[in-house]
Length: 422
Figure 1 (cartoon, rainbow, N blue to C red):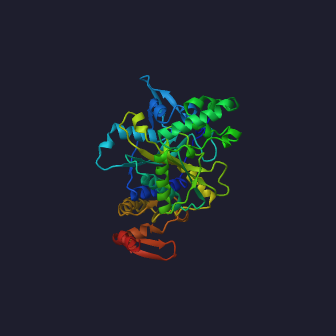
Figure 2 (cartoon, rainbow, N blue to C red):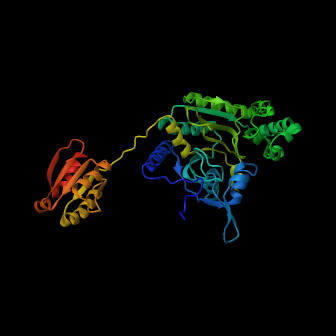
Figure 3 (cartoon, helix red, strand yellow):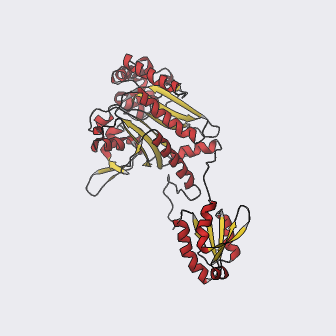
């Protein structure tokens, strides 16, 4: 019986993995310009980290986590998102003591959620995320949003829509919470069991329900924007001002609440409105999470960040018909004919690679024609033919595959010959 890949996972094969590498490199280039440093955290953490950091009322914690008991009887969970582990590391390694503040971090890593697989959604997926910890300045909210927009724009996406909202501070959210409870409570029995359990715990999460999104009470629910106190309103106005100043267009959506319990003040999502992208249009989401570090046991530290799925990013590129400028092919392919030539080609191939060339040779003792076909498939720039006669004369025949011209080159000058033409 064949052993197949687990449902909700994928093999990223040669020919496709180069797209991932290109996208990830672009992300690294952009984060470097913004002065964000990479962090790598474990793939599994204590379950309590996500219960406290992500929130007990979230779908992630309630339904989607891969949790197991290790041999020591401890509850562990494969990380479903990257913010809580990053903040845990920030606290544990006392990064808040670094004189260079805020602490600006990014990660690219695998996440795990047990959900129904569909286009762009996998049970094992890769997130790129950014976290800025240690600043209450609304300018850094705009910076984080701009960084996210730069990633999509510099990869060529044009059909983008940025949606923002303010969730307010603790005081504003408390007032809004009471209004939501009063609004939904008389008819909460008409809502799903998840919404019913969230009514007292976190009623704002009801607004994020997919099952009951068309219920009439959803449309008439109190808006958080009507409950922002003066400080929260001023903060939101600053964020909007900075985004406008740097030319980032946005829409305001008072129903945008995000799916994690730790968000406050700025919340945002970037969506694709490209034709053929699919019913789920959200590409990424993020927001401010003042209070998360305290929840994890650290000092009071403001933070803001976002995460995006690379799988959904690649889907968006496909929907817009964007082909990434990936370099394909090799610099040189060695064709060796005869035992002595094959022996010599092994060390010659090593010298080519040592000089910085991408190069390969035949390992299956194929005929001349078959080796040239292999070179064509590999899209090589030069084919270098070494036979017994050439070896006797200490020369090698080099063919430029673009022009078809061929030249006999001294073996001792072969590397320099290619360097001059590279």
